[in-house]
Amino acid sequence: MKTIFTAIFLALFCVLANAQTRLENAKKTATENKELILLNFSGSDWCIPCIKLHKNIIEAEDFKKLEKENVIIYINADFPRNKKNQPSAAIKKENEFLADYYNPKGIFPYTILLNPEGKVVKTWEGLPSEDAVAFSNEIRNFHQKK
Image 1 (cartoon, rainbow, N blue to C red):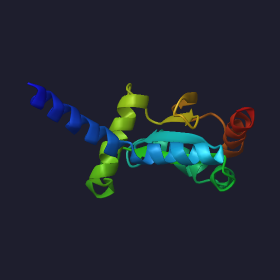
Image 2: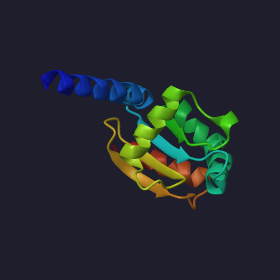
Image 3: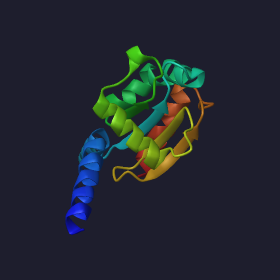
Image 4: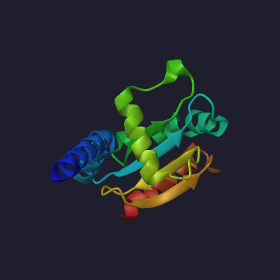
């Protein structure tokens, strides 16, 4: 019985350890650089609000400055439907882990601002009402407060 329990525990530990690669790396870097982590759940090829979010905010120069200025580390947990757009198996597994932990309701798009320890600071359900400048400034304000 101990052997079975140990084997199950080790298998679960390996899956969870591998599933957290991007987030764990982001936490480490965010701690070192005093950054926040922005985690975005999207359906890049089927979710119209997700597509608009990426086009109007994530791809905007104001948002990109947040990464260049070491304000945030951006992680996109994408769940595309088209076979040609599927991420690697490791990324897919990690995205599923992130969704189970941070987005159990399956909201798309869902954007979460995390502190370097992975604690939720702010969330946006759906497409944010702000434009790229206002959205970026809101994140900058959280960064300055911490």
